[in-house]
Length: 138
Ligand code: IDP
Image (cartoon, rainbow, N blue to C red; front, side, top):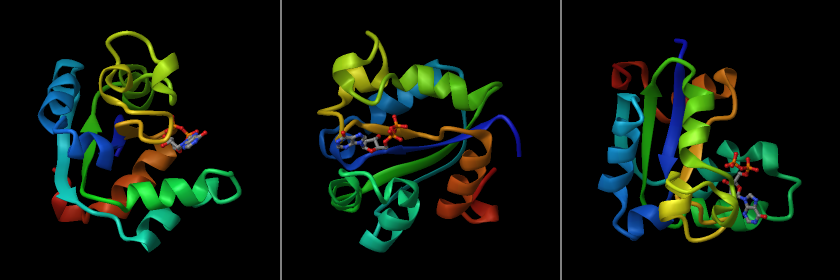
């Protein structure tokens, strides 16, 4: 698979009722949905998904937050998907995110920042396969 990225609508944005608006921004951004589900990470899932951040001071907080409630997981397709999606979501800290970006519009804070977006083509594939079986990706 190429030209794909993986995203999660995080527990804050699901709890705040932003699923529909965020999926709308994703569609307007020219991304095609290849896989989609409402799910919840266990603590073990969140630890594994974010294990590259295990040494960071916010790891425990991040794992607790990401397993705290339902999320929407999705695989998105577009030319240059990884980079274009990171532009659409904006900076990690919503206070620094550009106007009109998903994080600027919907995030609560640097930790509870509404959406995840893969940081490389390689990680997009790993993350898509972490959440979806082959027959769930179209
Ligand atoms: P990214 O999601 O914009 O790629 P990363 O630096 O990879 O940002 O961090 C992963 C996630 O960890 C962020 O999306 C955010 O939820 C959380 N995070 C990052 N920095 C902080 C922080 O300083 N405090 C609390 N949580 C943080």
